[in-house]
Image 1 (cartoon, rainbow, N blue to C red):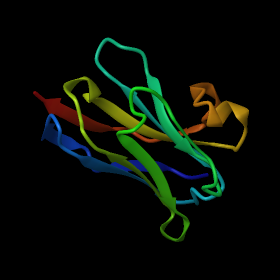
Image 2: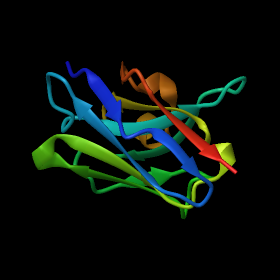
Image 3: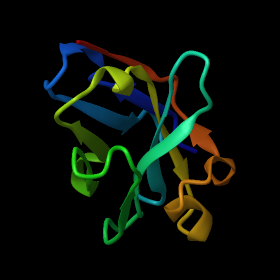
Image 4: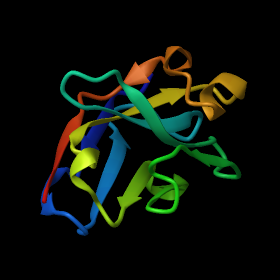
Length: 126
């Protein structure tokens, strides 16, 4: 089973961009739908975007739609979240998670994701 590792977080000004990376330490991501979630202080965890194992389908939730793009490179066993036009309200810890393809994962239901990374902090200043 894969151990997921996020990277690419940091601090940027509003309007800036970051690219988050989800990689596997042991095991392969390629069997799984990979989702990105975030949790801001005092708020519930929310699903942001996901991509199916084969990469054919993606789902991006508001308010990320139109600003964030999820993609995967199966040869590199990696999933990316490109975040553009960042806003202060995007500040959160971002997690990647893996689950089997299905209606629950494509709808970013967190209980359907069995593998989670430790998270990476994203801070957007105004």
